[in-house]
Length: 550
Image (cartoon, rainbow, N blue to C red; front, side, top):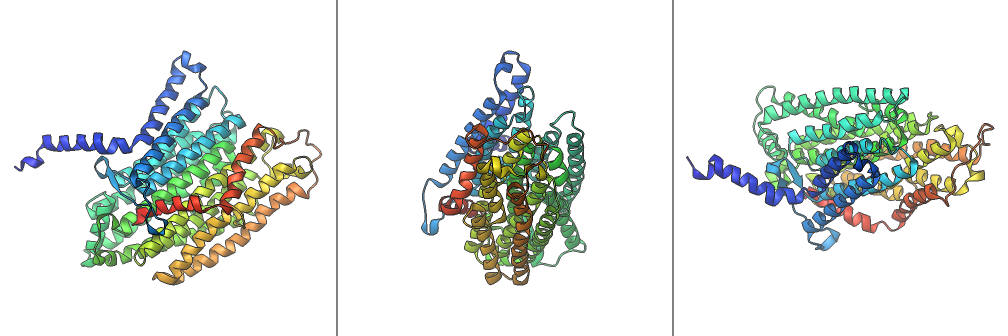
């Protein structure tokens, strides 16, 4: 027996890898896990109940943010190369279950930064109350921990576990408003749909693993290239296609992509606006990162210096991935925008808006994968466009849900009609709302315009350079038409706020901008404006994330 492969040496090598390599690059997740333990102790120990759980959660998230920034700095050593790209590296953690690279570092920072803003938002809005705070933040941090794992998943086992770790706490968050029938119904629908999607996804993953003989994503790409070079045994292609479609169903559920979007409007309408903000932003960022991870992991074996023959052999796999993602993007974008038009409840309108934006993001992913086999630099730029979109989406959607939540507290309503005539008493708030909604449309000179411009530019590059020219042209046309459609329902909200007379039954005025709620709204709206003008810094960071596709 080879002494290099005995049990003792394997255990020693595994222990060394875990302690010396994996855990030092896993510090943000460990910080979140430690904070969860502290929050649970706040419920158990009488003295600890005197602590405000929001500040305990905020402290833990700040530690996670610091570690995420330090890891990103370590990954790149602060060195720039020509073209504005940062030098990138890739490390497999815990025996290949997770991958630490530029995409992981970017999404970690995005999630940690979002959590800081989110916790401050919940403190101002008043949900959760002090009694339920520990439970609420435990669920939020637990879901975020799963989302961090989604962004770094490198193995089918971790893909499924990360999705479930992110999903299960979200089901409980949807039912946070105790005693409200709509909230309980939202949580039940979310859990039922989630369980169905998880079962379908798990079966698809088992098919892929069974056919390819491995669960490790880069190795699966190698196996796929070998299968496509030779002659596939009978039924192999069908099993792979069905497995891929079933796995896509699970990913589409997390993205709220059509036709797996049914849970989204009902959950957003029944849950608190604070929960809607968390699901809309954090869950979307993690799901897009996982889609990129799986699409590039199976379609581009670039993580182990592939030969040109292997890239060519995976052409059919990339064609399959691009076709599925593009189809879902077209359906999702179109249905989301059309269904939003007739909504009377602001949370339901934002739910369909979230669905539509998932479609735009998937268009960028489809362009990135289409370009991967043709032009690596253009593919990295397409990934950077998607990551930039996610960065601006944090501020746009969090600001939108913050306005809804704070107006709910002031007006006791979340119906669009209740916002009528706010321009007469709260012009500053209406201007802030207008900035956010116009940015969500994608009009200049705001952050949403730059985001859509970059994504559409990547689609134009795919039309020029990739073999998927007709499909990319369809994406570009559909994306442009949907942007025009979205004008109507976003501007309708502004029309109600400015031109409609205030309702006679209104007894309270909304908050002024010179107040604590107003300061929060201002702090979220300022980046929406500034990132539309001074966007090069965030884009350079997004290009750093795009280096993962090298």
